[in-house]
Structures are given as C-alpha cells and as structure tokens.
Image 1: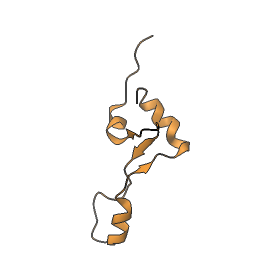
Image 2: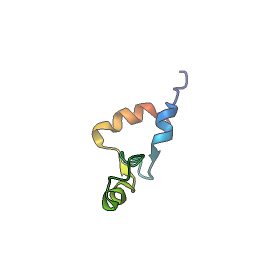
Image 3: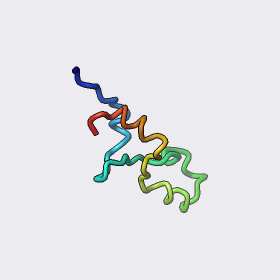
Length: 65
C-alpha cells in the first residue's frame, strides 16, 4: 500500500490535542480589527476544538496526525 500524502495547508492550520481531537484558530482575528471591540477580540484569541461534524474531513486531510 502506498503512503497517503498529508494535505500541507491543513497541517499548518490544525494541531492535535493529547486526546486526539483537533485544535483550530478562530476566524475574524486577522484584519479590520479597529471596529471590533476589545472584548470581541479577546474572545477570538483562544483556540477552539474542531466540531465533530467536520472532524472526519480534517482526519482525512491529516492521515498521520
């Protein structure tokens, strides 16, 4: 069986937790930050866990994670 290639763009966006779940960054924290409140920007700071509905897709992109 040949090896499966890892999707490199997905590898840069997701990291694995100790329990095997995937951690991701939140959206809306890149630019146009002046109109967003400090509270909103603070809430976007911590990483989030990939939803169970999307976990299969991420797992397919990262077969060795």
